[in-house]
Image (cartoon, rainbow, N blue to C red):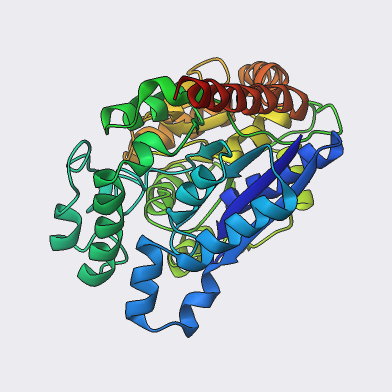
Length: 389
C-alpha cells in the first residue's frame, strides 16, 4: 500500500507532530511506501498578511502539489493530519479530482472551534458547536486577534458551504468516543468516523519498586492547568512534583517548583523518569483530545491524576488506572496528590492496571491493525461510491 501523508507542522513542535512521525515510521516498518507532503508554519513569517489569509482558505499551491504527487507517487490513500494554515482544505478537492480516498485524523477541534480547544476565559466554551463561529471573531478567540479569528472563521464557513468536510473526506479518525461525539454534534457525518487512539512504543517492561513522587510533562500554560498545579503544590507541600516543559507560565512555575522545574527534556529522559515516579499529573482545564503523555505514562506503568473533564474521564478510569479530580480545583488536586503519596501500594496496583491498558489499546501493533483497517475501509468505500455514480 502506498500512503501519502500530509501535515502542516507547527512552529513549536508538539505532540501532534510526534504522532505524525511515529505513524510514518510505523507504516514504513511494515513495508509500506510512504511519501510525506509537509508545510511548516515558519513560512508565514515571510508572507504578506493578505496572502497568508487567502492561503488558509484555499491554497492553489497545495492543490497543485497534491495533484502532482498523485500523478507521480500514485497513492492508494492520502492520510491528512493538519492542513491549517498553509496546506488548506484545497487538498481534499485535489484528492477528489484524482479519485484518491482521504483519511483525516482530527487531533484537535479546529473544525468546530477556531481556537481548537473549546476554552474561553479559563472555562470550557461550546458556544460555536453546530453554528457558524462568528462569536470567535468578536471575542478574538484565535490568538487574541479579531483579524486572525476572522480568517479561521472564513475558512470554516467557506468549506462548510461547499461541502468540503461533509463530502470530500472519506473517513475521519477520532482519537476517542468523546471527541467523535463532539464532532458529530458539530455537524460532521457520523457514518464517516472511526476511532483510533495514539500509540507509543515501549521496549522495556516496567517495574514498580523504588518509585517516588509525581511529575508533570507538558506546555507550561494556563489551558494545561499549570497554575492549578502550582496552587495545589502549595497546598500539598510534602508531595514532590517534577515539572518538565516550557511555555509562557515558566516564571510562575519557577516560583512554585524551584529546582524541580526541569525545563525541556528529551523523550528518553522523560520515559526514564516515568519509570521511577509514582504518578503523572494532567491538570488541564480544556478538552484534551488524546494526550500522548498519558499513553507514555501507561506504557511505563505510571498511573495518572487527571482532570475530570472531557475524554480524560474515559481514558483514565478513576480508582483503576489513576485518579480524577474536579477541573480547576487546586484543593481537590492537592487532596488526590496527598492520597497518592500516602498510598504507594494502591498506586502500584493502578500502575499495573495502566500497563495492562497500554498493552490492550496503545501498542504499535494494535495501532497498525486499526490504521490499515481504516485505510482499507476508505479505499473500498470510495470504490463503491464511484461504481454507484
